[in-house]
Image 1 (cartoon, rainbow, N blue to C red):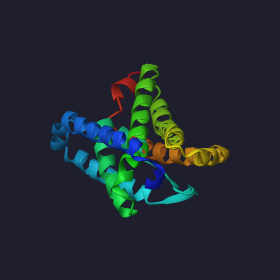
Image 2 (cartoon, rainbow, N blue to C red):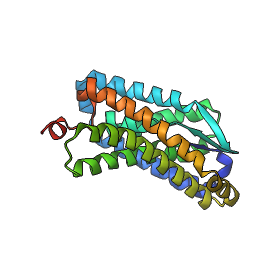
Image 3 (cartoon, one colour):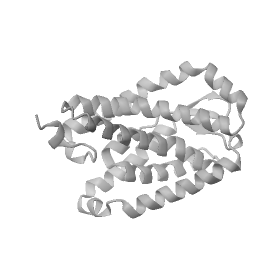
Length: 221
C-alpha cells in the first residue's frame, strides 16, 4: 500500500525514518552473510525477490485519493529468505519503487512500514505460532504460513494504514476507508493465493531454499 506524501505529516515520517534506519542497520549487522556467500543461490533469491516485489508493487490501483493499493508478495519473500534478509531486500525494493512512481523521499518511511516491515514481521510471527502448535502436517506450513500469512499480512497492512491516517488527522479519509472496508477483503484472498502458490512450489521442489521451513519438524511423523 502506498500513501501520498501529502497525507503524512513530518511528526510521523521522521520517527518512522529513524525506525527504518535502525531496523535496516540491525539487519545488516546480524544477517547471516556467510550463508549467502556459501550458497550463491541464496544471493540470487535475494536479488530476484527484490525485483519480483518491485514488479508486483508497480501494478497498483487507487481506492481513495492519495491511497494506492497493490499486492505485496512479502510473505513469500520472508518465508524464503528469512525476516532479516526480507527487510533488507524489501527496503531496497521500496526505495526503487518510490523513485519509479515519482514519490518524494519523505514518503519512503511510511511506504517501508506498510509494504515491508509490517507484512514481513506478521508473516514471521505466524511461522513461529504455527510451529509452536507442534502440528506436523506439511499443509500447516504451506497453507497456514503461505496462504494464511499472505492474507493476514494484507489485513495488518490495511489496519496499520488506517491507523496512520487517523494519527495524521485525516479523519475524512479514515471515514471513507471504513465505509469501503469490503474492498480490503477483496485483496486478502488473491494476496494469500499468490504467496501460498509460491511457498507451495518452493516446499515441493526446493525445500532446502526455504529459510523458515523445518523439514525435521514437519516430516518427523
